Image (cartoon, rainbow, N blue to C red; front, side):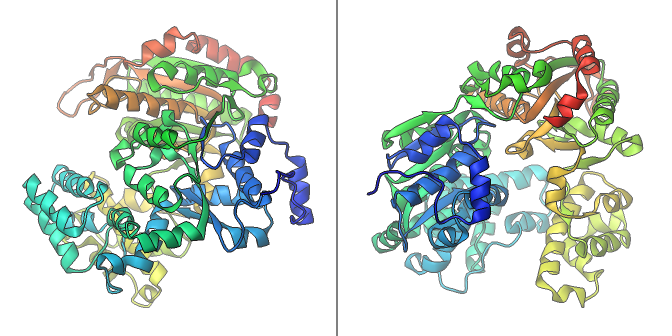
Length: 584
């Protein structure tokens, strides 16, 4: 093995060299790039430069010839967006030719699908099994006219049955023990029709890799594995990766951002197992993303989340140090008016800035959505709605407008209804047909929640998902959707008990995760963050608003001294150098 060389590889193109030479990695990023240890854990809170560090890790492994063709480095991610982000960063440090020969970037479901498709025969799967398409289980529940609560229970039983690596026979035995007949019927139908769901993929992939010959094949194919956001791994997914490259894995992430236990993720379990076989742990403590004020706000929750306290890497570059403030409102209507006024104030001075308005759940922002729909003086975007391509959007809008709410609600097969209103010639394109099938589920959810045909048609947008990520204006999204994103300013709605933390969070573990959700929302901000609390709340069964209890997390925020009151924040906004902020 050769000693580490500079990451400025002579194999890079001249354009890549220019990009690399302008980039100067931090001391910790260099440490990760040059680490000789095979098993590494990187604790990297939000905004610390983790993605760049992982790209440098790839470059270092290639330079030291830890991995040489035909072996490859597997970069495992959770989403297509993170897959694209890390692939882009790798391209800045590794030439396209070398990356093509040496690096595979794949999300974990894609990896599972690849393993099952290639080697499913070792667990009894033939080529006639259908891969996952849309949400088959949800469609089965809808065809049976199950309520939302009944549907949730079916999905929960099936998920729990498959989060543990079981054979189909063992899944059936588990479901029989639950006594839930509908879940059993749907699983029996899935097997009879030779279908796979997304929950089946990691279960079956782990079963496949228990075959020593198949595992040996992947161990020789992938000389090294790098996992991004390890805190989102289920034990089952961790098992897949360990069967491929135990002792040759870099786990990168932050347990304090572990907010997906409802999908089966177990941050503490995965970290404990990784630590047991790890040669070294490197912890980031400097943020490149956020102002000192925002970081102080996030640090205030560290005792609740177990997070690493952060400092700004260059505090002098944040004019005025940023701002964090907590604001109380008499009710939702007053809050909506304040959000619109604050957003107008910011966007008038920084038209290209992005303001994230985040809530724990969509329902908490309904009054604000109505206000924005009526008279928003600035562009705004709702992240819950899909963005369709310029061909599909008018087809869907036309189909929806040719129906009524009663027809949509009465339909036993909404997919077929909408497809029947589209020209058969258009449906010859598989991509168009699949997009319309997926859209039918979204339309069904909106109809069941009381949306009208007119309002649904108005929400159908054409464009590219990248547009949403970069568009200036106000962005409405949930805390979970916001993970991995960043905004110039963040407004967090719902600092009331029952909203944050969510009313279903009863146990201490569940409340600890709710604190992590709040910390994730706060840490999306660059310049400033504002938390909002309503003193009253509206209940469907109450004729008038009732008094709301403040969030149990508020004392930690307020007592930290990180948050200003609204008068102080307003003064800061009026006096700050907006030219300097726009340039930052």
